[in-house]
Image 1 (cartoon, rainbow, N blue to C red):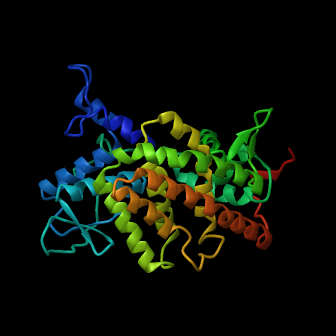
Image 2: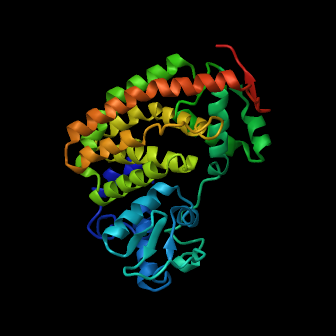
Length: 357
């Protein structure tokens, strides 16, 4: 479940987290399938804790739980925040959560679907679509290549190179098209959109104009427990920087720019922001992967300033702080992309070829 859909679906739920349906209109399984993934994860974990399948003191980490549910870390993080608020888990030394209260633990257990009362047919266990298996590495490869200009992408060759069916390759490219990384030309051929300074400035203009507005609208709907968890994660990250993984940095970006904004009730505003979100992907795939980690942390303190304003219910100050953060981030991103372009030669995949406009 994406962050953008959470608020709309929450409004359609009752206090137990189940989707409201007309009497007799749906089976319980159908209702469960329609509930947000983070609530399903919360309910499955809560049941496993109550039944003793997850013992007191068991260490729960986002990554392993996300693997069991075939999900990203975001809904797992949201589920943990709800379980922490309910007192069923407690934070452990910044590295995860322990089941139950008190001083026991940590007990390191190998988490399995069976331990959670799930099997392959259970409605609470989402099966990942086939394109997800190739998506992350493909996105990174194409973001890097986009720095070096416009390229034609051959769908058939992509499928062959990745050992998947053509439909899987097409689904992955369609996902990239929604983010503005890919487009189709007048002959309906896949084209990689070049990442030049002009485009980066255009995308930042959209973010500067719309993200603060979205945050202002979202602020009343962000659950306090979830917001406090995000603040704590930023504080921990600031204390240990630069000893952070690329994934951890991306999680911090996701907390503010995707999860928090996703609570904005104006769905059209979030749709308008979707393509501009591409700039987050640029930073994720350049920092710490093909580019050194900056000596000075690039955004953590600025994010903390936004959350400090949210914590005192000053959404106007939070929005203005976010606007400043986005504005000052532009020169940093432009410089990183320029350095990558100057210091590296493009690695041409077999499915790509340079293209003129």
